[in-house]
Amino acid sequence: MDPKNAPILITGAGSGIGYHISCYLAERGYPVYAAARKPQHLEELAKIEHVTPIELDVRDPQQIHKAHDTIVQQGKGLYGLVNNAGVGGLGMFSTWTDEELYDIFNVNVFGVHRMSNAFLDLLLQAKGRIVNIGSQGGMITSKYYGPYTMTKHALEAYTVALNLELAAYGVSVSIVQPGGIVTNVGENAMQGILERFQRAQPPFKAEADLVLASFSEPETPPAQDEPESEYNRKPSSPEIVAAAVYDALFTEKPKLRYLVGTKWEGDRVIHALIEKLLDENDNPQHNYSRAELIAVLDQHLVKKNH
Ligand SMILES: NC(=O)c1ccc[n+]([C@@H]2O[C@H](COP(=O)([O-])OP(=O)(O)OC[C@H]3O[C@@H](n4cnc5c(N)ncnc54)[C@H](OP(=O)(O)O)[C@@H]3O)[C@@H](O)[C@H]2O)c1
Image 1 (cartoon, rainbow, N blue to C red):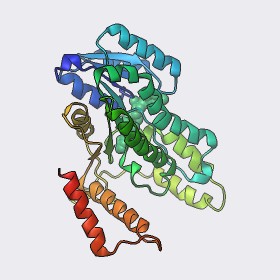
Image 2: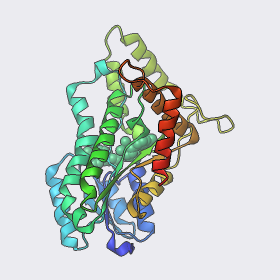
Image 3: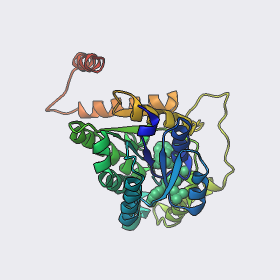
Image 4: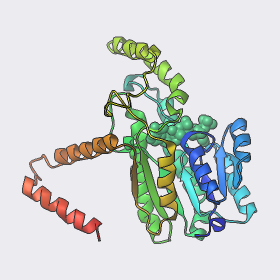
């Protein structure tokens, strides 16, 4: 596709993954509408060739409406929407307030729905693409990651169902599922994280205090000469996310899911999914034998490779 005919709107473009996606596309000549909230982010984005900064908080319907007007006035249409804006957050469930739970869903899930619906008219005209930035936390979860991974699990279902709905109208929807990526997502969520662990009540307080103490310990960089593990994580560069987004936007037949990250992270996802499959298979009404499971796997491999 001629880059000039493929304007892309990216949310949360002021920092981290969104900023890298914006640069990646702009460097290749695509007109990028880079949506950010902070004045300093908007100023920085304005300096990049092919990038038009747009002030936008995905929780604010009026700002979204205004951004839609701006893009219509530019007269180039909209080929792609990258729903990247997102917030992190850890904590024990007993310490999350209803408001906090709503807030994280408001950005990570409702924000994606708001944006996709608001720009659907332009995406339909262009027979364009929607790319959601999910997470490997959309398939797995772990202690203290409950609410964040709930939002990313929700985004998985949203992506699959929306893709089915829009396929007949020429719009495809994909989800990119990064593992650990070098950004400030943890630091940006730290205030809420600290507040929640400080709020813990007995019997959880002693455990929460240990977590709080661990935050004050100096961070040890990954030991590069040792293999990656739960205790020696090796986060990847945002470039690999940008490359997957590029493929989802421009390849002829985009994939529904793009798993991105390290080999160790990929193994972890596959093992978690197999564990889930075996749990589902373990019930009196339905239980494939080992041979039947392998036959089903083979059937699906054949289907996928056609
Ligand atoms: N880093 C990772 O390891 C990782 C792994 C898997 C998935 N992800 C996902 O990747 C996406 C980007 O995260 P990141 O790692 O690049 O973190 P980040 O540097 O914290 O970037 C998040 C971006 O989202 C923006 N944002 C937050 N709330 C917003 C709102 N209400 N409206 C509009 N923009 C908002 C932030 O803008 P402000 O600066 O204005 O707050 C920021 O630019 C997220 O969806 C995240 O869940 C990240």
